[in-house]
Amino acid sequence: MADEQVLALESNFVLGDPALVCRWRLASAKLPLETRHLKALRERTVNGARVSTQLVAWAKQHIEWTLGDGAAANPDGVLMIVVDGAGQAAMSVGPYEPLASRGCHALARRATSSLREARTTGVAPEMLWVIRDGTLYQGIEEGMRSSGVASLVRDLAKTLGIPLVRESGLPDVVRRSRAGIDEMLLTSDEHGVVVASDKGGPMARRLAESYLTLLAKV
Image 1: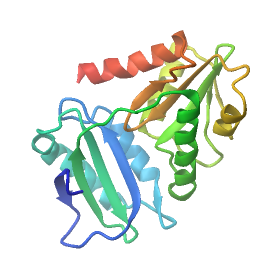
Image 2 (image 1 turned 60 degrees about the vertical axis):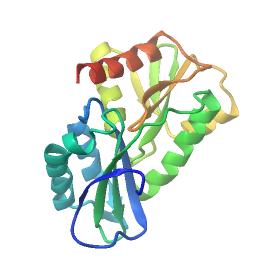
Image 3 (image 1 turned 180 degrees about the vertical axis):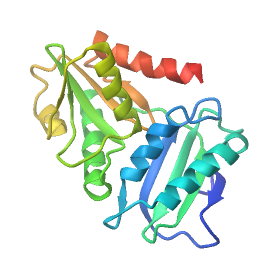
Protein backbone atom coordinates (compact mmCIF):
# COMPACT_ATOMS: atom_id res chain seq x y z
CA MET A 1 0.00 0.00 0.00
CA ALA A 2 2.99 2.27 -0.59
CA ASP A 3 1.09 4.50 -3.04
CA GLU A 4 -1.94 4.93 -0.79
CA GLN A 5 -2.80 6.96 2.29
CA VAL A 6 -2.89 4.52 5.22
CA LEU A 7 -5.75 5.37 7.57
CA ALA A 8 -5.46 2.75 10.27
CA LEU A 9 -3.92 -0.51 11.41
CA GLU A 10 -5.77 -2.85 13.75
CA SER A 11 -2.74 -3.07 16.04
CA ASN A 12 1.05 -2.83 15.96
CA PHE A 13 1.90 -5.70 13.64
CA VAL A 14 3.31 -6.62 10.28
CA LEU A 15 0.41 -7.44 7.96
CA GLY A 16 0.62 -10.98 6.57
CA ASP A 17 -0.44 -12.17 3.13
CA PRO A 18 -3.89 -10.78 2.24
CA ALA A 19 -6.71 -13.27 2.75
CA LEU A 20 -9.45 -10.71 2.08
CA VAL A 21 -9.41 -7.40 0.22
CA CYS A 22 -12.39 -5.02 0.06
CA ARG A 23 -12.36 -2.04 -2.32
CA TRP A 24 -15.17 0.47 -1.78
CA ARG A 25 -15.79 3.56 -3.91
CA LEU A 26 -15.78 6.94 -2.17
CA ALA A 27 -17.59 10.17 -3.05
CA SER A 28 -16.56 13.55 -1.65
CA ALA A 29 -14.38 11.80 0.97
CA LYS A 30 -17.36 9.83 2.25
CA LEU A 31 -18.52 6.23 1.89
CA PRO A 32 -22.03 6.44 0.37
CA LEU A 33 -22.95 2.79 1.02
CA GLU A 34 -21.26 2.51 4.41
CA THR A 35 -24.06 0.56 6.10
CA ARG A 36 -24.36 -1.89 3.21
CA HIS A 37 -20.60 -2.38 2.90
CA LEU A 38 -20.17 -3.04 6.62
CA LYS A 39 -23.08 -5.48 6.59
CA ALA A 40 -21.44 -7.36 3.70
CA LEU A 41 -18.11 -7.29 5.55
CA ARG A 42 -19.78 -9.06 8.49
CA GLU A 43 -20.95 -11.78 6.08
CA ARG A 44 -17.44 -12.51 4.80
CA THR A 45 -15.16 -15.28 6.03
CA VAL A 46 -11.38 -15.52 6.41
CA ASN A 47 -9.91 -19.02 6.57
CA GLY A 48 -13.37 -20.44 7.18
CA ALA A 49 -14.20 -18.13 10.10
CA ARG A 50 -16.66 -15.25 9.93
CA VAL A 51 -15.10 -11.78 10.09
CA SER A 52 -15.14 -10.75 13.75
CA THR A 53 -17.52 -8.15 15.13
CA GLN A 54 -14.46 -6.41 16.58
CA LEU A 55 -12.93 -5.97 13.14
CA VAL A 56 -16.20 -4.60 11.73
CA ALA A 57 -16.43 -2.17 14.67
CA TRP A 58 -12.80 -1.15 14.08
CA ALA A 59 -13.55 -0.45 10.41
CA LYS A 60 -16.67 1.56 11.25
CA GLN A 61 -14.78 3.60 13.85
CA HIS A 62 -11.99 4.57 11.48
CA ILE A 63 -14.40 5.35 8.65
CA GLU A 64 -16.15 7.78 10.98
CA TRP A 65 -13.03 9.23 12.60
CA THR A 66 -10.27 9.27 9.99
CA LEU A 67 -11.78 8.91 6.51
CA GLY A 68 -12.43 12.62 6.00
CA ASP A 69 -8.78 13.59 6.49
CA GLY A 70 -7.35 10.39 5.03
CA ALA A 71 -9.28 10.79 1.78
CA ALA A 72 -8.37 14.46 1.27
CA ALA A 73 -5.98 13.62 -1.57
CA ASN A 74 -8.46 11.22 -3.21
CA PRO A 75 -11.98 12.32 -2.18
CA ASP A 76 -13.55 10.30 -5.01
CA GLY A 77 -11.07 7.46 -4.69
CA VAL A 78 -11.26 3.95 -3.26
CA LEU A 79 -11.22 2.84 0.36
CA MET A 80 -9.35 -0.45 0.74
CA ILE A 81 -9.48 -2.83 3.70
CA VAL A 82 -6.97 -5.67 3.72
CA VAL A 83 -7.31 -8.57 6.18
CA ASP A 84 -4.62 -11.23 6.57
CA GLY A 85 -5.08 -14.88 7.51
CA ALA A 86 -4.80 -14.08 11.22
CA GLY A 87 -7.65 -11.57 11.04
CA GLN A 88 -5.38 -8.53 11.33
CA ALA A 89 -6.34 -5.58 9.16
CA ALA A 90 -5.18 -2.36 7.55
CA MET A 91 -7.19 0.41 5.91
CA SER A 92 -6.05 2.85 3.22
CA VAL A 93 -7.33 5.21 0.53
CA GLY A 94 -6.03 5.35 -3.04
CA PRO A 95 -7.04 6.85 -6.39
CA TYR A 96 -9.90 5.46 -8.46
CA GLU A 97 -9.04 3.98 -11.85
CA PRO A 98 -11.96 3.44 -14.28
CA LEU A 99 -12.47 0.13 -16.03
CA ALA A 100 -10.49 -0.19 -19.25
CA SER A 101 -13.18 -2.33 -20.92
CA ARG A 102 -16.93 -2.47 -20.34
CA GLY A 103 -17.85 -5.04 -22.98
CA CYS A 104 -19.94 -8.11 -22.12
CA HIS A 105 -17.07 -10.57 -22.19
CA ALA A 106 -14.83 -8.33 -20.09
CA LEU A 107 -17.56 -7.93 -17.47
CA ALA A 108 -18.24 -11.68 -17.50
CA ARG A 109 -14.55 -12.39 -16.88
CA ARG A 110 -14.52 -10.04 -13.91
CA ALA A 111 -17.65 -11.67 -12.50
CA THR A 112 -16.12 -15.14 -12.89
CA SER A 113 -12.98 -14.08 -11.02
CA SER A 114 -15.12 -12.52 -8.29
CA LEU A 115 -17.21 -15.68 -7.90
CA ARG A 116 -14.01 -17.68 -7.37
CA GLU A 117 -13.15 -15.27 -4.55
CA ALA A 118 -16.63 -15.65 -3.09
CA ARG A 119 -16.22 -19.41 -2.79
CA THR A 120 -13.61 -18.61 -0.12
CA THR A 121 -14.97 -15.42 1.41
CA GLY A 122 -18.74 -15.88 0.92
CA VAL A 123 -19.31 -12.53 -0.84
CA ALA A 124 -18.58 -11.61 -4.46
CA PRO A 125 -17.47 -7.96 -4.71
CA GLU A 126 -18.45 -7.94 -8.40
CA MET A 127 -21.49 -9.64 -9.89
CA LEU A 128 -23.02 -10.03 -13.34
CA TRP A 129 -26.69 -9.24 -14.04
CA VAL A 130 -28.69 -9.69 -17.25
CA ILE A 131 -32.13 -8.55 -18.33
CA ARG A 132 -34.38 -10.82 -20.36
CA ASP A 133 -37.93 -9.86 -21.30
CA GLY A 134 -38.18 -7.30 -18.51
CA THR A 135 -36.84 -9.61 -15.78
CA LEU A 136 -33.56 -8.92 -13.95
CA TYR A 137 -31.36 -11.99 -13.33
CA GLN A 138 -28.69 -11.83 -10.62
CA GLY A 139 -25.67 -14.07 -11.19
CA ILE A 140 -25.24 -15.34 -7.65
CA GLU A 141 -24.34 -18.84 -6.49
CA GLU A 142 -26.07 -20.90 -3.80
CA GLY A 143 -25.00 -19.86 -0.30
CA MET A 144 -23.31 -16.63 -1.38
CA ARG A 145 -24.27 -13.20 -0.05
CA SER A 146 -24.69 -9.95 -1.96
CA SER A 147 -22.06 -7.22 -1.75
CA GLY A 148 -22.92 -3.63 -0.82
CA VAL A 149 -23.66 -2.44 -4.37
CA ALA A 150 -25.41 -5.69 -5.29
CA SER A 151 -27.77 -5.31 -2.32
CA LEU A 152 -28.54 -1.76 -3.47
CA VAL A 153 -29.51 -3.00 -6.95
CA ARG A 154 -31.71 -5.71 -5.46
CA ASP A 155 -33.55 -3.07 -3.40
CA LEU A 156 -33.80 -0.71 -6.39
CA ALA A 157 -35.35 -3.52 -8.47
CA LYS A 158 -37.96 -4.14 -5.78
CA THR A 159 -38.74 -0.42 -5.51
CA LEU A 160 -39.08 -0.08 -9.29
CA GLY A 161 -41.21 -3.20 -9.56
CA ILE A 162 -38.67 -5.10 -11.67
CA PRO A 163 -39.03 -8.90 -11.39
CA LEU A 164 -35.85 -10.37 -9.89
CA VAL A 165 -34.47 -13.93 -10.26
CA ARG A 166 -31.27 -15.46 -8.85
CA GLU A 167 -29.38 -17.53 -11.45
CA SER A 168 -26.20 -19.52 -10.87
CA GLY A 169 -23.57 -19.89 -13.57
CA LEU A 170 -24.57 -16.68 -15.30
CA PRO A 171 -21.06 -15.57 -16.37
CA ASP A 172 -20.54 -18.93 -18.09
CA VAL A 173 -23.84 -18.54 -19.93
CA VAL A 174 -22.82 -15.09 -21.15
CA ARG A 175 -19.40 -16.27 -22.35
CA ARG A 176 -20.99 -19.06 -24.39
CA SER A 177 -23.72 -16.97 -25.99
CA ARG A 178 -25.55 -13.68 -25.54
CA ALA A 179 -28.61 -14.90 -27.41
CA GLY A 180 -31.79 -13.90 -25.64
CA ILE A 181 -30.05 -11.33 -23.44
CA ASP A 182 -31.50 -7.85 -23.84
CA GLU A 183 -29.26 -5.91 -21.44
CA MET A 184 -26.32 -6.58 -19.15
CA LEU A 185 -24.60 -4.89 -16.24
CA LEU A 186 -21.99 -5.51 -13.56
CA THR A 187 -22.31 -4.46 -9.94
CA SER A 188 -18.99 -3.65 -8.32
CA ASP A 189 -18.18 -2.24 -4.89
CA GLU A 190 -15.33 -0.37 -6.58
CA HIS A 191 -16.88 0.64 -9.93
CA GLY A 192 -20.57 0.90 -9.02
CA VAL A 193 -23.22 -0.14 -11.53
CA VAL A 194 -21.50 -0.71 -14.88
CA VAL A 195 -23.69 -1.02 -17.99
CA ALA A 196 -22.21 -3.26 -20.68
CA SER A 197 -21.05 -1.11 -23.60
CA ASP A 198 -22.41 -3.64 -26.13
CA LYS A 199 -25.58 -4.65 -24.24
CA GLY A 200 -26.95 -1.44 -22.79
CA GLY A 201 -30.60 -0.55 -22.48
CA PRO A 202 -33.13 1.56 -20.58
CA MET A 203 -33.47 -0.67 -17.52
CA ALA A 204 -29.72 -1.09 -17.00
CA ARG A 205 -29.17 2.63 -17.50
CA ARG A 206 -31.90 3.45 -15.01
CA LEU A 207 -30.22 1.30 -12.35
CA ALA A 208 -26.83 2.88 -13.12
CA GLU A 209 -28.29 6.38 -12.96
CA SER A 210 -29.87 5.62 -9.58
CA TYR A 211 -26.45 4.66 -8.25
CA LEU A 212 -24.84 7.83 -9.68
CA THR A 213 -27.64 9.93 -8.15
CA LEU A 214 -26.76 8.45 -4.78
CA LEU A 215 -23.11 9.43 -5.20
CA ALA A 216 -24.10 12.93 -6.36
CA LYS A 217 -26.24 13.48 -3.28
CA VAL A 218 -23.21 12.75 -1.09
